Each structure stands twice: as C-alpha cells, then as structure tokens.
Length: 444
Ligand code: SAM
Ligand code: SF4
Image (tube, rainbow, N blue to C red; front, side, top):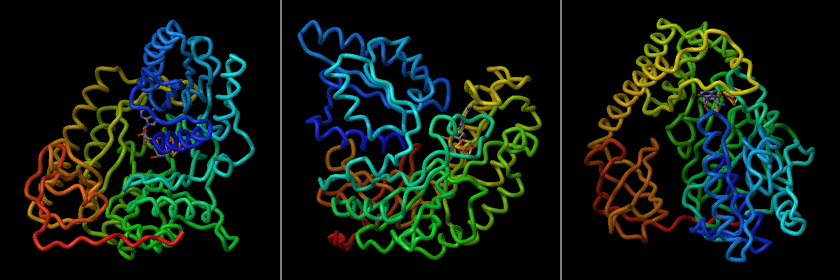
C-alpha cells in the first residue's frame, strides 16, 4: 500500500514540476514514506532522517535547498514527536492527507515553516488526488480500493494510523484500472488492509462486494490477471470464494492471515474467528480451486503465548501447507491494548519460535515450488532480469520466474516450461511454438 501511495504522491507533485530521481542525494524534495506496523520499521525512520539531514546540510552549503517530508503511518502516529526529534523535517503528512501534499510543499518552501497534516479530513482523499496520468507504466499495478480498519486486533496500529474502514466507489476504481490498462498494465492487485470487507458504492446506487468489483474489472479486455490482498478470514464470503473457480482472470493465490494457531491467543488478539473457522474457509477455497497457492501472516510471541500455544501455531501451519507466509515476532505498539498486557514473551523465546516457524514455512514453500517443476505455466513477463537476455515474470501462483527472451516480450503472458526451482525463483524456457499476441487495448 505504501508503494501505491508513493506513486500517487509523485503524480500529485508532477504539476509543481517535481519528477522522480534515482539519486536521492540530489533530490530537492525527499519524502520518507513510513510504516508503523512494527517497532523496527518505525525506528528505521529516525536513522534514515539522520542521513537525509546531513545531505540537506551539504546541499545548503552548496547554496541549494532541500525539503524533507515524512509521510505514512509513522507520520500519522508521531507527527509532533518527529518535528521535535528531527527539526530538519519540513513536512509531516499522514496517509489520509496526501491530496494536500502539493499545497503543503508549496507552503513549506515559501514560508520556511514546518507543516503538519495528521488529522483525518472529511473530504475523500481519492476524489481530490489528480487522475492517474496516461504515461506508459508498469505491467503489474496496485490499486487501493479499501483503507483503514474497524476490527481492532489488540496488537495492531492500523485502526489508529489509517483510520476507520473506508471503501472507494466502484466507478472510480474501474476508471483508474481502465487508465492503467491503457498505459500497459495487464495485472491489477487490489489493495486494502481488509480488502475483502470492500463495500464501495456501485454505479447502480447499491454497495458492491469485492466479488462484484472483481467481476466488473474482469470485463476490461486487456486486464488478464486480478489479485487482491490482504483478506480477513471473517470476510471471506461464499461469493468471493466461488470466484476462484468461476473467474479465470482471478489468479489462484490467496493471502489469508491466521496470526496464531490457538483459540486462546486468537481471543486475546480479538481476531473474532477461531481456528476451526479459519480451516473451514481454506477447505472451501481449496474445494473451489484445488491448485490454489495459500499464503498467510503469523505472529509469534504474542503476550501470554505458551509453548503449547506455539505448538498449535506450528500444527496449523503444517496442516494448512502454505505456498508462502510472512512471519513476525510480536512487537508491542504504543497505544494498542496488547502492549499493556502482562506476560510479555522474552525476546530470546520469540526469536527461537520465529526461527522454527520460518523453517517450516521455508520447507513448504520449496515443496510448492518443486511441485511446479515439469509444468507449463503462464508467466506474465514484467521486466528484464539481472543477466543479459534474461526476462523476469510471475507465475499465476505469484512465483518469480526467470526465462531467456527478447525485451519485446515484456508485458506479454508466455507459456513457460518450468525446468528448475531455486530458493527464490523458478527457471524455465518459453514453450516452443508459443505465439504471443498484442494485448487488446481497452477503450478509454
Ligand atoms: N488486515 C490484515 C489482517 O487482519 O490479517 C493484516 C494487516 S497488517 C498491516 C499486516 C500484518 O502485520 C498482520 O497480519 C500481522 O501479522 C502483522 N502485525 C501487525 N501488527 C503487528 C505487531 N504489533 N507485531 C507483529 N506483527 C504485527
Ligand atoms: Fe490490523 Fe488487520 Fe486486525 Fe485490522 S484486521 S486491526 S488491519 S490486523
């Protein structure tokens, strides 16, 4: 989501003459787009700010100005503190105020005074951001459709930093996807903290579900692949699950966090679902799409987690058999209910549990990858690989795939015979006799 937000911020600043630079040391404006989800991510901001400040001082000695902005959820959570701890910062802007960024930049550069925008403005940010430009862009693009969260898991800062749950209007999303399609996108990943709770207003005046939105987007001719992330188990309704069997453009990949394998810990996390609920959902998903690649998020060391609770997490991961997963040590976040709980788990125990669960997931991921060796998979070619003549793409299961081929194939979907799997990617050859075609351009 931060990647998507960064793109929208850059586009919003284009009217003032700003363009992206590959050389941060020479930037007139540096924006740090930050994450507050775990302590490590938040702390990185201050070390990075130290570096950027030194650069600002060097440029000032050379007679040039540099504006420094902090955006994202650290900005939202620690706005005033950032200004106090890092006086070199000119602008602090929370995620709901990006449509005001251009005005904040103009004001900071003319007045020389610090600007802070961390309230949750009543106006819809998306309606006030400039429409996405028609330049040639990525083959695979993100589109935020839902933001914020009302679920209040006891470990999580999202409801406080991104605010209440909000869904964008369906027509606005369709328009954005059509513009991305016109500039070359073939794959769209819909984003939301709880993407499957999507309930944006439809053109028919009724709220649309995520399934309805996906079906509409699947009608855009040059969009060949759809994905969405992140989903909450409680919001996986039957219509959405059935789509895995019914809609060929919906890729067979689902990221569905379970967080912890014991009902006692899930209750303390306020997840509002049980292990049985989770397993029921994944059984239904597998019935709809037997080859689905399942992914998840797991937290180890939540306060009060015993060895037995952790074994239950390992057992659930073993039964579910994931194609990949994101695993985290519990990180106490200021202002969240779990941060104040007694029986915090010692760091060493967290580290050991993380290692154990990561090893299990690693084994599962490798086994999943090995099982695709010998298959012919459709690979969306997204760009050049590191080696000359090499292309890089993604399989339907979101695996990274390397093949040899001409750059002209970037943006095409190629049939690839998978020859080998290595720890981080698959290698294959484009099937002989494979004929690629120009994607059908959407009429916009
Ligand atoms: N909304 C999604 C859900 O409910 O599953 C997750 C969104 S959250 C931005 C991404 C992941 O970060 C969570 O699934 C969780 O595993 C992890 N996370 C959130 N807060 C955390 C914390 N305090 N410590 C460790 N991991 C955390
Ligand atoms: Fe955070 Fe997800 Fe829970 Fe919402 S549902 S509070 S985003 S972990």
